[in-house]
Image 1 (cartoon, rainbow, N blue to C red):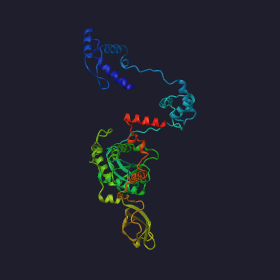
Image 2: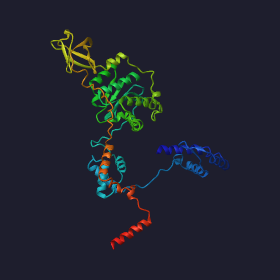
Image 3: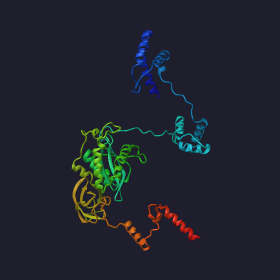
Image 4: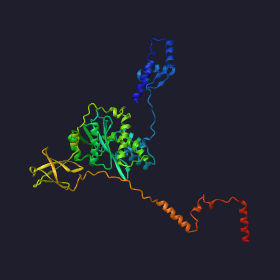
Length: 460
C-alpha cells in the first residue's frame, strides 16, 4: 500500500512542479493551472484522469508546507470491528494449546460466546502477534516459485484418473516440460503401472528429446527398478518428491485441471468406444489446442517456448536398450537359469556365475545374457510356461457385446395388456389419470339433470 501511495505522490509532484516555481507571477501560475485542469493526464496506475484546479492548488500548498511526503495520500484509519476482548480470548486459547488452529479457536469461541470473528480475522491477528508458528516454534514453511531455465532441463510426471470406458477406468500418464509447459510424453491406459508409464516416457523421448531430470512422486510405478534402469541408460537423473509434499508438482496438476475442464468434459457428450480412440482424440487436442495456446504464466505458446536447438534425441538403439527389463540370476551346475517359471539353457562357461538377463517384458522367449557388462549370447528356451513378465499385463480387449434383441420393458408392457384383457379390458390404474376418457367431466347439462331426477324418483 505504501508503494501505491508513493506512486500517487510522484504523479502529483510531476504535475505541480512546473507551476510551483517561485519565479512565476500569480497570473502566469493561474494560466498554467487552468491549462493543466483542462487536459487529460496519465494517472499513477496508467489510467487517463483529469485533475481539478482546486486539487492542483491544494497539492501546491501541501508541497510547499511539507515537501514530497505531504503529497502522499493519508492512510485510512478505522476502528477495529472485532471487540478487543474477543481477540484476547482467541490469543489465550492459542497460547493454552499451540496446536489449535484458527478454525478450532473460532469454533471454541462460538461455543462459548455464541458468536465469533471470522477464521481469517483470527489468522491475521495470530500472524501480527507471531502466534502462527508451528508447535516446535519454527515458522510455517515458505515455498518459492520455480521454473527450469531451459527446455528439457526437467520433466515432471504424474497420473490422472480419467473417464470410464466399457466399465474400465482409464489413467492418463503424462510428462510435462517444466520450462515450456509442453506435454512431452503421454498415454491413456487402463492401468497405472510401470509398463504404461514407460510407454508414455518412451514416446516423449522419441518426440521431444532426452531431459536432464525427471521428477516423479512415490507411487509404485514410479519407484520401480526398471524405470530407474531406463533413466540410467540415457543419463537421466530420476528424482522423487518428498512424501506428502506435492508442492513441486504444481505445473502438471494445473495441466490436469485443464484436461478435466476442456477435454474430459467433452467426453460426456462425445463418448469414446475404446482406448485407441481416446488416445487419438487426446493427441489431437494436445497438439492442436493446448500446445498452440498462449500460456497465462509464460506469455508464450508451449510449442513456441520449447527451444529445439539444444535438444538431444536418443537413437533407436539407445531407446531399445533403455526400455529392456533386467534381472540377475545365478547359473546352475547344469548351465540352466530359471526366470518366472521359465527355464533357459546358457553357455556352460557361465556355470556358477551371476548373470544379467535383458529382455522385452512382453516377450520372454528372447533373452539376452550378459556377464560383467559383456554380451554372452541369447538364452535358449528349455521350458516356457509364461511368455510375458508378470508385471507386463496387456490392456484388456474390449469387445462390444452383440445385442440380444430382447426389450425387457416392452415384454412387461405386453404382459400387462394381456392381464387387462383377461379382466374385461378395464385398466383400473389408468382410470385415475386425467387424460383417460372415463375421467373427463360430462359437459351435457340436460343429461345430468335427467339422471339426477331419475335417481331422486328411484330414491322416493
